[in-house]
Amino acid sequence: MSGIKEIWLVRHAMTEWSQNGRHTSYSDIDLLPEGMDALKSLKRFFENETFDQVHSSTSLRSRKTASVLGFDQLMLTYDLNEWNYGKYEGLTTPQIRQLEKREWTVFKYGCPGGESPKEISDRVDRFLNRIEGKCLLFVSGHVGRALIARFLKLPIEFGAEIVLQPGKLSKLGYEHEEPVILGLNLY
Image (cartoon, rainbow, N blue to C red; front, side):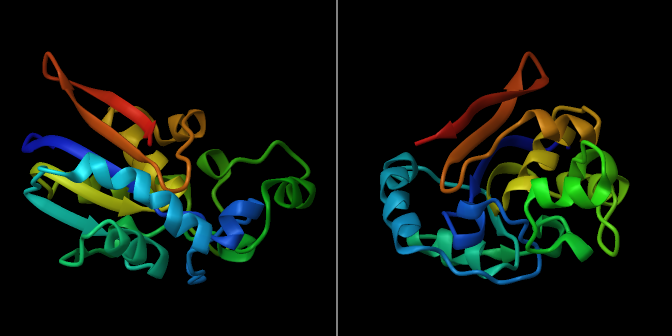
């Protein structure tokens, strides 16, 4: 991570499943029209900005968010894809907690048939260790939260303490060489 100067992180715009709280990893759910409209308020943040690298998950929702914001030249990477929810794909947290019979979070328990917290932590660390400069990333919610936790050198479980709202911009950087959150869920 020594080569990173700043990370601009955009969570994809609203989809039907994100609106309903359904966990979405490999299902390619399109953006809602109101989600695309809401992205217009973000465009001003990118005026006169340049990036050394622009990356996106391979999902349609992240790629379309990037395109609406004027970024069509992307480096697509599986390492930014959303957490694989396995058997919990399409379910809401209350539904999963009913099945698990405990206060389940993906950051603590992972998903049967999907990915564990360690697997996500390793995947995000691998990505962070190969980027450099000022980077713009288009991602989904849980993987973005995991990325923030690991950028801050915190355990993956810290991701449960962060919320990334659909169609919002967050910024990560440094203060006195220490990784910090510069802004979260900016409009």
